[in-house]
Length: 421
Ligand SMILES: [Zn+2]
Image 1 (cartoon, rainbow, N blue to C red):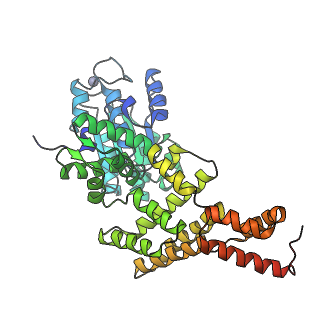
Image 2: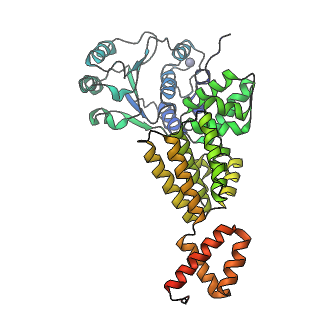
Image 3: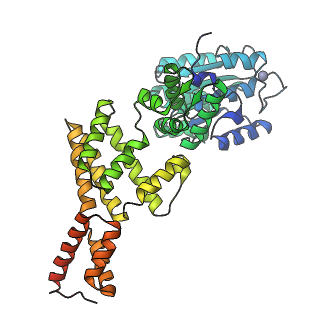
């Protein structure tokens, strides 16, 4: 038996199976039940989130033979359902807007639109990437939309709704598809792996789902790649090295080496990443995400759904975050963003990365103004020397304490040796 790619094999066949787009399924099913069929639907949203899948299910719902009228629960086994599912129905025509964007293509379509369906109730035209049509093609299409034959339904799909003329938009029922959260993707991948009889380390699931960036289709093809290299059991390390995805572990190491200054450790880790052939820009983008997450978590904002980390990962991030103050994270974030910008023009990305990481170490080494002021205020209560001494020894290393003490001395000298009340 030939291997069938996951995205295809697992393409949802029923409304309720389209992951995370329930808000759309619900309205469409409802309108079918009420007999309110529109002549034009517009599905917009990011790539790989279920737009054409939903379009095909809608085409089945309109033409399923298990009921006398369109049904919100297509049977999937009648002749029409099967033909639509397999993609060879005469009455459900899929057009790629990107490669059929000209006026001639739409003229052909307009001639065919008037012919009655062969076997189905409705002739359904699914036009993917409809925003690619030329202006002339849109104008021709508009004429059909203005007076659509009774038996015709258009379903347009697009990732760029703003490129579609208002005259077309105003004639469509519009549905906005959402980017799928990492958690929903990870859960779905887990289900697929389980039912396909593979085993996977839990630690690999979230990174794969994250790498799909909200697209179920992309995440599924990443999973395909991993499966094709495995013999049934997928370890975290295998999965990540096959896909060139950076483990959370690498970022946690960076944070440790920054909070507990270890320049050699940092450079070693960057060396390891470079040897693995990891794209530095993507690596930095991942690091920025991590800084954002721990800063939010440190501020008491834990939106697991949005941040896209598993519970275990979240615990590790919380622990790493506890070594940084909010200001330090703010400065580190700024350094990382500047680094990201500079990488665009860099001829040696690795050097930029190393330099930025060393800057981050100095953020940790040099006391911030706020921490100096805090020290001063502590000193007011307990006597300057003992505060700087005992508080420092408990949590900070000697370099930091020395730096802070000398900074406090500097400030004291500004106030002529007096700490003001
Ligand atoms: Zn059917």
